[in-house]
Image (cartoon, rainbow, N blue to C red; front, side, top):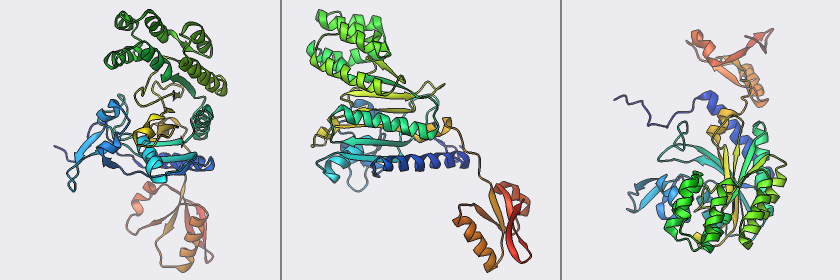
Length: 381
């Protein structure tokens, strides 16, 4: 067996891509900071009962587990940083008002999300805690649009859903937990025959509402249709009001899908995904998850989004590679001063070590420091 082979869907990040990722990371964290989001750095692994609190079954399946040699307890490698940030808000910061937090770090998945996905995404995101109104959802989606714009993603589109619509129909129709899971599965797949078979024995109003959900998608007109055909439950009316406000704010870049129930057991309100032209999978996911703070023993409404920087770096325009300056290896104080001044000005200066003149082209230098008339000057290479 070749000892240098990596596991499936795990890969090294080589210099050009690593530089692009790091540039995006710095740019986005600076943007988040300018909006008032404070950076936190949760640990890579935690006890499993803390790591998976309030996250539902899906995250459990995606989490690598191991035994802590010190305590004998089961630990997990994080598959999502958002629950960790919710824990920090609930138990470490312990603030009474609104808290804005951001984060960036590696997460690990037992299985890739898609055929081309990595099992080691580099997750970056932003969250608002302590505010339950639509205003915080608006801010989060505006921040996401600003982030994608700053990264150079052209004309992203957004899909909006709301888990409260399906949840209200199921709860008022007396749907038990097992059937709710089955209905959730067929709705996500837009399997209308399967949905009709599962809903056949439910009350007429519930059955009819469920069968309508797969067709309630499109632009803001989908909200108008939903108001006309769905039951007049207050929960549904409030959810549609929120979706209408968010869609209006996106100024034509958002679509509605009332059968989009991703993260159903985790989210409590609006859910959204951002897409880029030519890509089938979402480049950002987010939504409201008010129940997670409650699961940590301190009810705190929350909304946020996250992205995989590795995926983002593959689709955004790459900056032209920066040429470096080659400097000779010499014990010359004047040369050392010249190199220091250039580096302080933002230039990349690479010192050529003796004996490697034949591999000079590998250094990526387009200029060099040369001594002319007793002074070290930069010239073309």
